[in-house]
Length: 546
Image 1 (cartoon, rainbow, N blue to C red):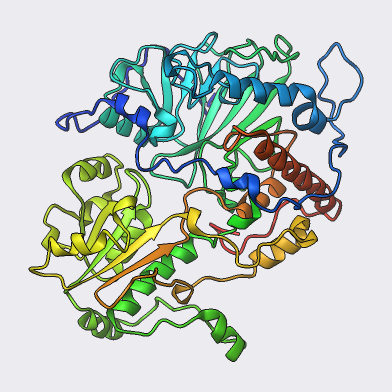
Image 2: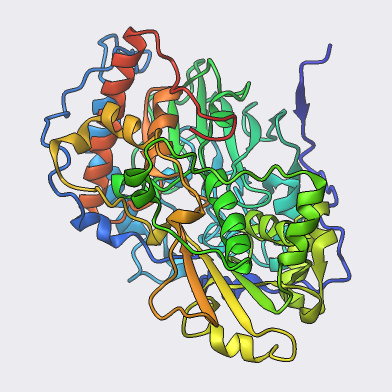
């Protein structure tokens, strides 16, 4: 009988990398962190100090989360987010991973190991972890694969097929330790007492995954002193680990998530702050495409909010639907002497690059190192657009640090034989803050926040060049991220059935943890209200965004 579950052989040596002719790079240098590692969100400690004046420490959750030998009902919120155990666990994790401790002596924090299971996620700094039988990698960004190298021998690494190919290429991880898994299918992990894992596209970077784990608690793995009382029981636990992800309706509607109850959600809390409610990714991609077209055609940029005031009801969306005759005319208007430079991570931001290139019918240039990475993403459409000739392409890829108003003139000068102007696009969510952000009481009203953010639209008229831009060199900060915005995190939390939220980012400072804890409580309270009204999910504006 076909159960839909794949059983993995513990000695599986499935090939994960096709490009053996490309030299694998030693990954130990990743300890210094690549360009994709943006500094920790330290300003969160000073933002909106008065968000949450309401006492939410006593919010009840009617769930029996006590171990079998205990009969009294406990508050799951208090167990995780308000109890001394939770505070102590994070304090312990902070101490164990302190930068003052040599990297090879740091211990693995509790939130990188699934409670009661011999499974670690994105935890390679310490090598072999006590009790861990399965190492899971969410994606190929160096803050997650840090310390992986050709010398890895601590145990099998489970990840997506694309991620396996990338870390083999980047780090030289031996194929014998890589276990590439297909998406959307439950796989039984060997030596874990029958725990299954389902990989789901994380909507982050190519190959990124979020994970649904299901199984019994069988072991206390890792270095934490906080042990689950459920170890050895017959109860089945379900965990959702989000790695790094950009939450979307497609996640909450996935068969492995919709209608399921999760004992714990390990949440990517990179932007768990209302200041960072940046626009939907699809709208930003379209805005970048239209911005480039408008610049190349010499159209004037207009402040969209002024248009709203002057022309109420004006349709602000620039339509991409044109008949063939109009498209031919538009293509003739595009000058060929303008260079478009898009800032990206080593892995990530490819969607903007492809959208711009297709809009102006251009190839995409990247240096040999970056092209080798891109080809390991197994994206046929992208591969067909790549070129090694910088003069054969109006769209060039550079690192984010190379796309500034100060660096673009030097880059343009390298190709002055053909290009007379340059437009730089620097996509990152860190530069975006809500203009209306405040510490008013409205900021703790989820209904208001959703109404505000889900009724906004974003077009190229909302993008403005940075100071110092001129007719020859222009640079634009793009509010594009491959992490979830605060609004998306809120919609996600209100749309899934869960007992506990465990923050995995910005947890190094107690003030940051306390602020996130309060938001978890507000989400819980709001979800209860919505369930009483029969609202199990936040309605989506489109299939791929709220």
